[in-house]
Image (cartoon, rainbow, N blue to C red; front, top):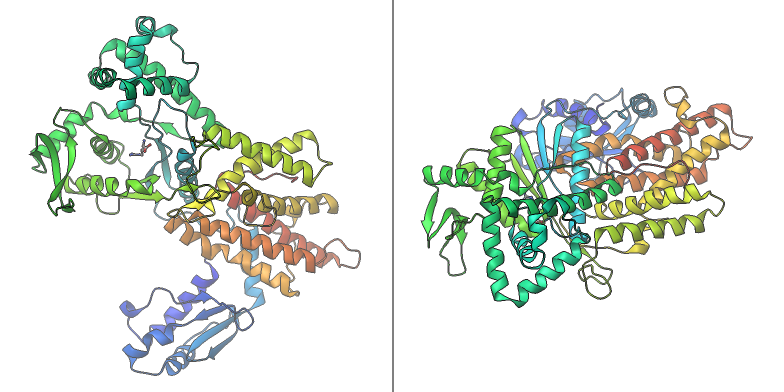
Amino acid sequence: MQSITDTLKAKVELALLKLISEDELPDQLVVPSQNPKFADYQCNVAMGLARALKKAPRQIAEDLVANLDVSDICESVEIAGPGFINFKLKEDFLKEVLNGMAVDSRLGLEKTANPEKILVDFSSPNLAKEMHVGHLRSTIIGDSIARFLEFEGHEVLRMNHVGDWGTQFGMLIQYIREEMPDALNNPENFKIASLEEFYRASKKKFDESEEFANASRKAVVDLQAGEEKTLAVWKVFCEASMQHCHEIYELMDINIEDRGESAYNDLLPVVVDDLKKAGHAVQTQGAWGVFLEGYKNEDDEPLPTIVQKSDGGYIYATTDLAAIKYRMLEQKVDRAIYVTDARQKGHFEQVFKISELMEWSKPGDLQHIGFGMMLGKDGKPFKTRDGGTIKLKDLLVEAEERAYKLAKELSPDFTEEEFKAIGKTAGHGGVKYSDLSHSIGTDYKFDWDKMLATDGNTAIYLLMTYARTRGLSRKAGVDVNDMLGKAKLILDDPQEQKLAKKIASLLDIWPSVTRELTPNLLLSYLFEIAKDFSSFWNACPILKPEITQETKESRMLLAALVGRVIEWGLSMIGIKVLDKV
Ligand code: ARG
C-alpha cells in the first residue's frame, strides 16, 4: 500500500511540475508534522525553491496550492509562516488506510518489485574457542538484517564464514602431537571435553615455549597442505566447535549455514594467480600484494594489501577475495552484506576494491556493516568480574534467569510454564532488543536493569503491550483479531486519532528501515506505538458497560492492529510474542 506521505508527495509533485521541471524535483517533499496541533503533514519545499524561481517562498507556496488537488484526502491545506504548507487529513482517508492494513497479512507492506539474491555474511566466529560476547552483535544484527530482506521478498543466503583454518589450529594440533599422540593415531576416539580448557592449555604452552610456537606454525602448514592425520584431528576440533555454536544459535533462534574459511582453500592459489595475471598483484619484499590508490603508510609511502606472504602462506584477505569470487561468480549473488565489528572496515574496503578491479563485483554490490562495541555499564569493555571474556552461553543463561525472576515478581499467579516462557522470550529477546535498539555503528552500554525495564524501549515492555491486547480478548470473550476487516473505525477521541496515525505511519517508516538497514528505527517506532497505545488505553475505556457496541468494536480493532504491528515488528528481530506476560 502507498503510505500517506507518498500519496501526498505524488500530489505535490504533480502540482510542482506546473512550476518547475522534473529534474528540479526535490527528494523529500512531505514529512509528518512536528506539531500535530496545526497539521498532520507538512511540505516545506517552497523555501528551497525560492532562489531558483526568484520568488518569495510564500508566493511559491500559494502557486503550488493553487495547482494542488488533495480534496479527496485532506480536510484542509494551509500556508503558514514563511511558506510551510500544512495538511490536515480527512478522517475517512485515515480510516481507509487502516482498514487496508487490517485486512492484509503483511500489514500493507508490499514486497520488493526487484527481488535479488543477497548473501548475508554474519556471526562467523573463529573456531576452537567458545563463542563469547564479542560474537553477539554480528549474530544478532546479521540475523535481523536477513529477516528484513527475507520479508521484503529477496532470496537470502545466511552464511557463517567461520574461521576454521587459521593459526589457532596449528597450536591445538601441535599440543595434541606432543601431549596426546594417541589421539593422532586414533582420531575416531578423540573427544574434547572442554574446548576452552584445551585452548587455554595450548595457548599457555605457545606463550611459554618458542620451540612449541615454531612447531605450531609448521603444523598450520601441514594442515593447509592436507596432511592426513593433521586433518583428522582438525576435523574433530571443528565439529566440536560447530556443535557448540549451533547450540547457541538454537537458543537464539538463529538460522545460518556454515561455510568456513577452509572451504576456499583450493581457490587461494587460483585467486592470487588471477591477480598476478591481471597485473594487479606485484612482488613486494618477497610477498605478493596489490597497491591500491590512496593507501599509504605513516611515511606516506604506498602500502600494499598483501595477498600472499613471503613464506607462501595466504591470509585473511586472500580468503575473503576467494570467497567474493565464489559468491559473485559461482553462487551468482546480486549483493553481499558483511556484518563485523567496525574495526574491520579497512580490510573490507581493500578487498572490495580489489574485487572491483577484477570485475567480480561492481561498486555497491558488496557492503560492510561495521558495528560498535558492546560495553559494560561503566563504559569499559564488557567483561566478567575478574576481567575475563564473558561466554555467550553464560550471558544468555543469565538473561533468562533474570527475566524469569522478574516475571515471578510481576505476575506471581502465573504458572511455572508461563514463567519459563517469559524467561526465555524476554531474556534472550531482551538481549537482542537492547542490542538492536542502538544504532549499529556506535558503541553501547549493556545494562541488565535497562534491558529488563518494564517501562522503556525494551523487549519486555513491547511484550507486555502485546499481551495486553490478548488479555483484552480474554476479558471480552472475543478475539480482538476478529475485528480486523469487520469492525467500523470510529476516531472521535484525540487518543484514538493519535494512535491511528501512528499505526498508519508504519507504511512510511518501514521502507527507510529496509533501505538503510536500521533496526533501531523500527524499534523506536514500536516503542512509540506502545506508548500511544498506553495513552489510548488509559483514555478510552473498552469494556465498560456505558460504551456502545460500535465504539467497543472500533477500540478492539485498534488494539488488534497494535498487537499485529508489535507481533510482526518483534518477529523482524527474531522475538516471538507471548499471550501472557
Ligand atoms: N572470523 C572473523 C572474526 O572473527 C569474521 C569473519 C567475517 N566474515 C568475513 N567474510 N571476513 O573476526
